[in-house]
Length: 345
Ligand code: C5P
Image (cartoon, rainbow, N blue to C red; front, side, top):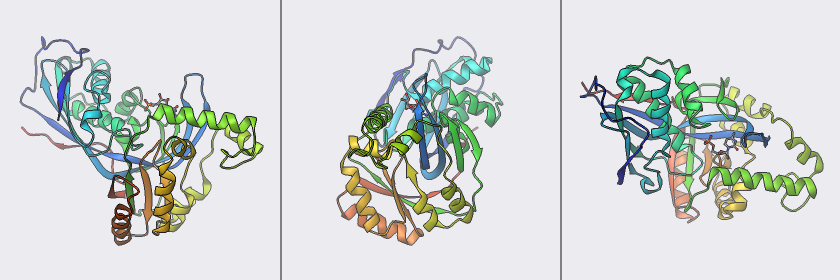
């Protein structure tokens, strides 16, 4: 367990604590990107994206309760690597919601307890998920009555993936990833195996590595670092990315085989360049019968699509026996976004 950290940003509990007995718990899923197309870096340092988000059944739980001042306790998977101070995204979400609602219940502090199952810095948006869960839970605790759309607006100021963690499902993201539109998809449950790596990747470093790879390719088209290997490809990457028609058609058909073939992630070459063992993990997963294999987000988790639940179990057992990852998990998607699970009286 990580010790409670002081957030510093919240006032002392001088105001009333209207619902002092309450605690509220919200559950929130991890995300995968079925497509992650990255445009050039923008003036604000972010990259314009076109992505297909997909929420899967690997959940963190976030509990909020009134306290003298804002603080966070983190337990579970990778807890010692989650910031316990104001850098914690869940605490930043609490502060953002407080300034958005400005009512008297929100004036008091909040103790946030995060129970982690989503690995930290793994490409699965665990930090954004915790921020989304904290927003949903505090909205309930304070009876603030913000709509989901309003929570998404608050959340997208905290992190690019927070809006999606609130929504869940299978959704197209644009802009930094915060502009969401539903993806037309058949009501298919997809079965995934996640291979967790022995290590972490920093999202900004992976984006920076992609920019470097692209710069090399633009100067030396067709060089060995080039996955597509042509000046035309390098030039195309400098323009706004497009939604992949093959993936969207696969999702409409609900055919896992077609979805597996259409998975894509522009960050994958960058993640593999920073974490070379991922190449082998991906290859072994495909050799073991996965319908598709991809680095998840900025990595280093790898995601494998299986034809059904039974194949996913076989793949998980074989992958963990192959010694190409730290551990594996079987998950299904899509699942809904952050939601309150318990509000004791
Ligand atoms: O928004 P968030 O804090 O999750 O982003 C983390 C980092 O990932 C950013 O600081 C940026 O370096 C990179 N990023 C990006 N373009 C995006 C999303 C994230 O460059 N659309």
